[in-house]
Image (tube, rainbow, N blue to C red):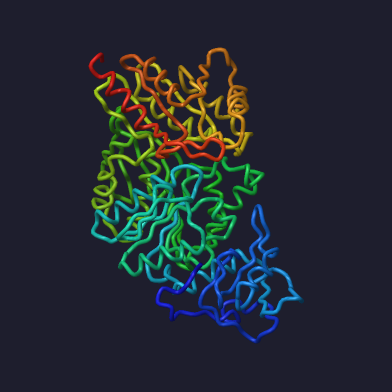
Length: 493
């Protein structure tokens, strides 16, 4: 339920939705709204949302029975005994209403959004750390958690639902945050969770292929990502990756200020890699006529792009280049993002969240550039998700590694053997692939197979600390499994 924090805030439907049709009343004053009929309390406005599994219009009678004062609907309800406000899109209306009831908090804290297929989490964390390092109080909403400037909660979604987002943003305002940084997922955009939010800046990291189980086509997925531009304030800044064709194509749709970043294409903010090792890399960051070296313990070309995007935001917000670089260099690692495991072993071990063909290729190429020995990759694919990407994932691993080990990711309610078979179908030489369904055993096998100079990438789950099998969430942490094995074997190494 979304309720104004001080219980004094209210919104009038006629004012908020002048284009709507109101039946049964000239106007409706709202102090609380809810989109779940089971949570309706007397006096609430019930919002009927068409979901992926259920249509909220089917539960209007229950909402009225529970005492709702009015209904927000996408169609007329001639039999309703309470006032009805008919709008074209109740998802969008719900988001706008939640923000209004919270006092439109994004108007009172500088709000930065980060979207894209890969790099959202790292870029968001870099931006937040950069501002914090510069002395600004900063909130963060993303895959790793929701931080309101005072307290951090676990994240159930990359981007929280509209009511929770409004609540967190209002808490950031109450906690006197200067900045609110948020990851914006394609699901959130398709479901209008950002309706009513005003972004002061938006980063588009890249747009590749993902979540086609939900969006159905790559065109729908790209359209969802492009929708992020709709939430930019009139003078809001867009940061676009000039080296990513789909992201660069958005330039023609942007009327306001833009900063481009790139390594290969012409851009306002660029980078040149100087040296790269297994434990760190150095690149030259150039903005205008100024160039400064950046030394970071996070490796890979994809991380250089993350740094460029974060730098663009920092510079646009008035930080000088040295302050930007100090903030970037202050981040030693992001949980589950090419996170290095050091237990004294004579080979590299990394854990990463990569679960798309492009992300897998990027991680493996980054490691290949600094590894003299073999590259061993442990990976799987989530069940009940996009099946078409699985063969592409297998192909990416075969092309960029020396030993592939297939295992379970989060099979959910799909037969693990079917998922492994889909992955295996992408290999030209499937006989060379090790298939070990038990993820713990697969990780142990990979580590036991590694020799001095080799490198093991454990991909797919990253920061996650559980595995979903059927309806069960079982404890499982790739980092802890690997670190424990390495410590146990340490004497023999």
